[in-house]
Length: 329
Image (tube, rainbow, N blue to C red; front, side, top):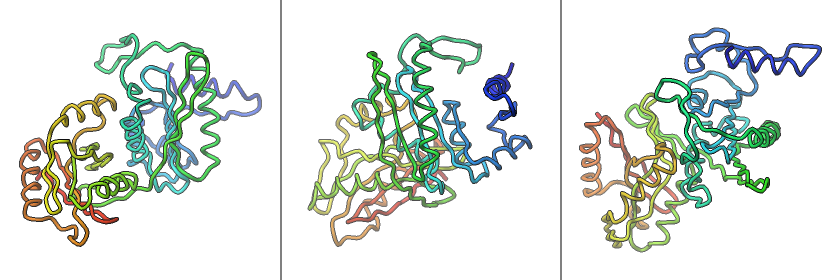
């Protein structure tokens, strides 16, 4: 029996007088091709994604035409942590943007170092390469289900976006973590959409201020959606210890950088990767790229263009930043 049909039957069994659950057996990633599903999504007030699939949540966020808010509720691979991503009522901060801000918390917060890493015995339940799951005790699922049901109702009643995480402890206690949500900025460059949030900008402004009067910088971490041509910039790393910082010059070092970037990839299950460079300019020097900056952009384009990968260089000033894009063509 399709899961949608079984869930609709279970929902309707809770009510004696009316049928409130209707099943639609379809591939949500092809919602535009299925008239019943397309209409249901377009008429909905709330779309709740419980697929635990970033592919599905990004499709719902970016490709589905509907005024409905999008929520995503899922467990981490070990089944110890429950995560809720909830858009604001006006959808100014989309579900895919919340996903990226959630990843940033995963790499910044030491308590979440193993949050997305595989844990426990992996079981294969089919014959395709992705048919792998883990065994999670039913009592743990019941606790998570109760928390999730209430959390969804509370988030739906509120107007603001939310990122919340609940960790189920062995002693039956629950720890709650609420992650700050930041407004999103969007820029278009050469047919690509670049998305970043004000939390990223605040970090770069802070790193710049700490190193004044010298310039500073580092690498940018993010995610490339090659299908939709979206480049998400999620985190800015500080300058490696062997970098050279002067009032009108910055040369990024590399000591420990490869290991740090690989660790970020491991912590986020491969979601976050290297996407570019950033550096600061001192007060009074503007945000236009220097001759040396132009050489860096050309180098980035040369190195990544053969793989069809775009990259960016951000120049950060006093409370402002400029995006310089190195496309793949």
